[in-house]
Image: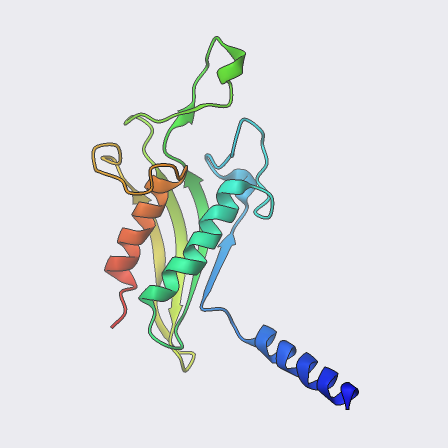
Length: 164
């Protein structure tokens, strides 16, 4: 009896893993991105870089809200330039401080594909998002280091991936 229960549990777990996720986020050659460092270190591995992990996690949670049942969205980032930059500072204690100014706007380049429940392609394209006024508008996620980039993506999803 215990063996049958174990077999049923493994089968259920296997079928749950076989289901495609509603959102898949990929980072294409992140080592070539304009700016994705989470500090002055050059870590660009999507599994270790806090910014890439945060962006993927956020999209996996937020994008399904824009999808109709059964739809899938694939986003492949080709370049990321975060809001702000590291400026040369005399004090070494401040070497890992990102300075956010209007002259350093966020920019996201990516390809996307939206697939319907039956597997038909609904939309696809390449996007280059840039927010030149990012520092003049109110922001809700004040403590999130990717608040400007996530706002751009949320606005893009509202315009292009809005649930019918």
